[in-house]
Image 1 (tube, rainbow over the protein chains, first blue to last red):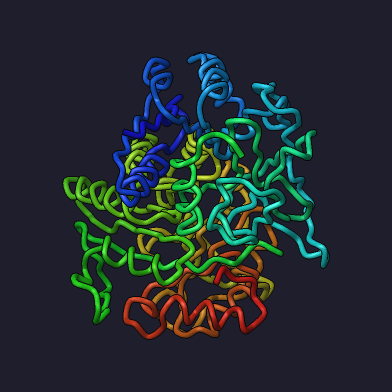
Image 2: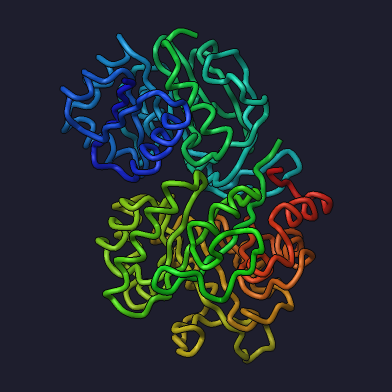
Length: 218
Length: 257
């Protein structure tokens, strides 16, 4: 039995990611059990952990602190595969500019920055913020989660703040929206995505399937 | 490498059934929103919008079940609109698996509701649906006003001012329907779309009036829409989503193929 814990700290839509994981687990034909839970015991007993997040970072970090989610994620990262999604990835960084500046978990070195109000592309066309929709992701490093995912596939993004990572060797995927931004990061047992694999149809489901089979190595 | 413009089929549902008719020859139950949503997803829809037009409160439970069923099978973003009046309604829809909710009438009766929704659930899931109609102006400039109740009730609100206000309140996206064009199949109100798109920073979904594929392309190229929404041209099998995408790509529009 492959036990997956989706950490529920009260922020947003966990149904989507749980359903998507159940769906790919069912397709894999091996027993997959998905728990959407804040319970540290269940999370500790899981084989793999998903750290989602939507909404504003200040509220997310407040709940993360209140429920001691930072500790839970930190412990999980030592021993089992962890997938952080969207604000979940941003929360791993040191600091975010959102909400006048919020300190984050600091598990990865780098900052979360605002796209800006006057974002333009290389042809000087104005770009809307949030960055919302399907954008191409360039795979900058090989990783087990990229297996069977064609390079430059489009994934679904929705965010106004982006990660600027200090350790470029941890960047596994990039996308371009006015500036080159981090689409995915990986270190040890953790893989983090700015986009939503659970909303990215075939390519997203492929990544989730890979996550269910990932041993936490590259 | 750039962000793709989105094509969004819209399902209008009453008591858990797709209305305005859907005619696909090869799906089992063309009135079942789950079947229809799955079909669109397979054809390459970039998102699905589900509008609940059920009048009675009792039938809303059906809507929640339908949203849950769609979300369990369709792994692209799902927006749910219709009858979103309280924070609790949003919570219910998000828990059922919606990714975004579209707020319309409740925003007009209480603009602060949008602020509360965005603060609680984030701008990324707060879509404000706007029904605009052209009205005469003193100086012959183009002017649109916000209407509610399917275009019957005038609000006196200037559409451009209103959209700006909604974005200030935290709306992360605007679903902009021209009540003059809705159901006409003569194309989007491109001037309305362009004016709104240039007035705000957030993405605009153009809606109302699509009759052919050229209209979809115009919505992006002339109307400066970030996404285009249509119902009937897809429902009746006049065009598939795949055909629409191929056509738009041939016009140089960035599309997820």
